[in-house]
Amino acid sequence: MPTLIRTTLAVLAALCAFSPVSAREWKATPKALAQDYAFIQDSRPDGRMIMIMWLAPEMIDEGSEILRRDVVIGVVDGRMDALGVITYGNVDSITLTDASGAPMRMLSSNEMPPTVAALLTGMEGIFAKAMGPLGQNFHWLVFDGSKIKSCAQNAGFTVNFADEHYTYMTPIPGCPK
Image 1 (tube, rainbow, N blue to C red):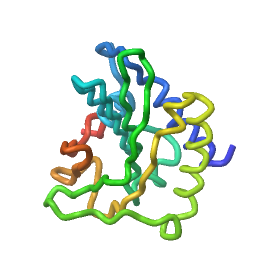
Image 2: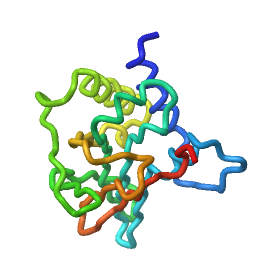
Image 3: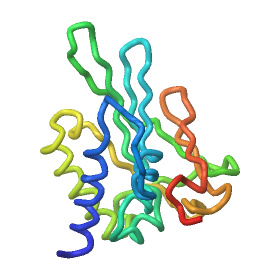
Image 4: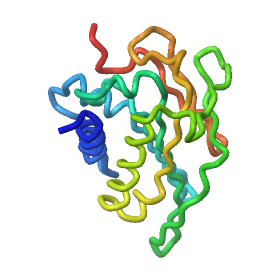
């Protein structure tokens, strides 16, 4: 099986572990620690729920080199009304800053390495089928990750979205000691 397909399937399997209900994992593996850390859920009192996911290299066994060059972020912005109907918002105002506070450059589809572009295309299709409207409204963005090292000291970043600053500090849980 080609590495890209294995990588896409590994990322999807990692995402299947996320649910609205959470529990403390018993004897968590380094990969499970990284998966847990990479997912942020912000449930707000007004029914708005924002989910952010960093496809950190430590989340998967194979193909992690694809994720070491660039920062791949998935974002969903949803709001549930009193009847339980979910509407999804736009994710076009997202920015990332590195640990020093410098803005990170978002890559256009023409600038993405072919392996990353193929990974995103595969994930978009899998998410849409596996998670329905939630998966269809996950927006995937790729940023220049040249300064981001998931297992290095102080090499994290911040996702700036919806009047909040979501931080990823490094080294992330699951890195080799």
